[in-house]
Figure 1 (spheres, rainbow, N blue to C red):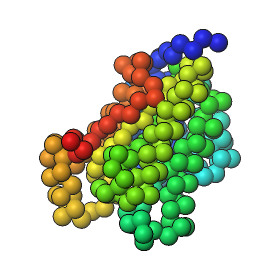
Figure 2: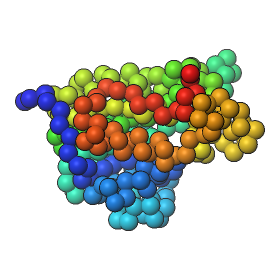
Figure 3: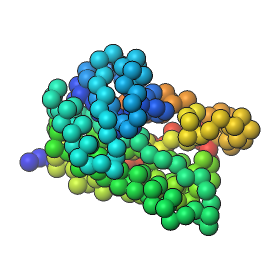
Figure 4: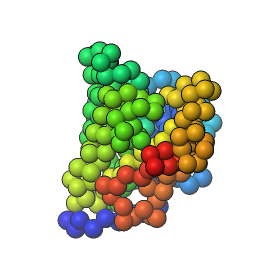
Length: 244
């Protein structure tokens, strides 16, 4: 089989962790641009998802439950091969390293890293040639935490970047692209609602403000699109210049 990577218009997308935050913003942004949408998530938020993308399907799944993920992708593939996947599902862990318990560290690493591995395993049998997978890293991957997550969270997101590159290499013969988006501080529940913290984080950016979830979603749609057809194994930083 040729390893040439192609890109076609998105007909059938799956967002794993699409019921809230950046995931739900991506579902909203995809409306009118994507033919079909399936959201896999843990809580029961089907009405909210349907309100953002008329006709979107909701399947209950946990990223640490491979059987549920496989069932979710099978349900999505009943409407055609899947050609776009986004995996924003994850947890934060803001505690300092020396006060992080083993159980907390394990939950963060398993959810953010093994969860992404499980999604890729579940997705691949149902992907169309030219499909695009987008994982979700973070600016914390470069800094070891320090913005909204601690060192273990930063380590988990650094692992996502490494996984992106390895998966891109392995899936290229299947004509599947794998990239990741690395958001900066974004207005979601993960960031909390303390205005003092928001103001301090905004001051650290060159943009002078926090990101809206839709701005991260726009990066995801770009990586799904034919405009990014020559990108694989890449990290798209959407962080307002906070690291400069």
